[in-house]
Length: 309
Image 1 (cartoon, rainbow, N blue to C red):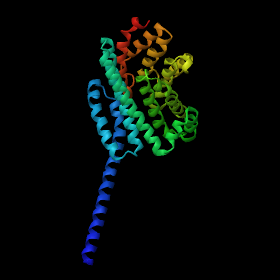
Image 2 (cartoon, one colour):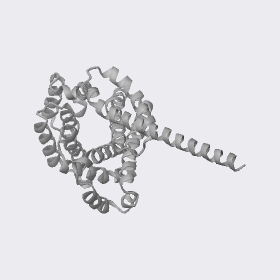
Image 3 (spheres, rainbow, N blue to C red):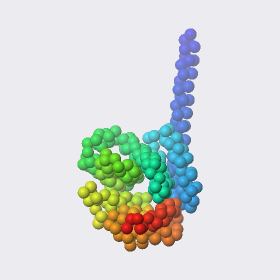
């Protein structure tokens, strides 16, 4: 009997060790896959076919979600997934939204807007989760108010390595707020998103083609001054982004036109910026897909000129 128990114990130990080894192998494979996904992002940015990229992205997102379910503590993978959600929602869902707006299909507009908000919120929630892994007290900080959140980011996020998490969390959060701008509670959260991007910009303004500058330009241009908007500051952000990108990243032009130029009713600036996008060709292969997305939308917004001015 004693020998039988000993054999049983050894078998149980072997099973436990083999199970642990299998789990370790699964995590190792998942971590290797996460690194591959992160490194492959540049190929997508250089792609030339808008429809093909848009058809592929949902599948890529679901693959990322599958791997992320295995290694939810992998910050690199989480940031890659956030970026994928934001890119798909901005580049394809918002494009669909503008098409149904032009058709006057209010029911479909509401459906797509709701979907965009949910996808942006998913990206933001991943960012908060990653921050929570760094420090479980982040939820308490968020509940304590804006001033505490601002001080917390200053204290905890001071490295260039922190910039991707800060930027994509703030960008996704701000985009979710824009999609849900009819919800007053969403608007109240804008300072939290804004300060995350501001901190990223102060640490490394060049990140992702100086997109933090563009984000801050949009926020300052789109908000009324009573809510913290500042048109003069918005123009400074946009002009700096145009200069630093050598006018090769068309998202800057497009955002500048549809926010600042519209809000200040500067028709000449609006048309000039959008024409530069439409006629700009392929000035930056590393941003080819983003520029083609922007060109599609710039053509549409040029057609809206007489409605806006």
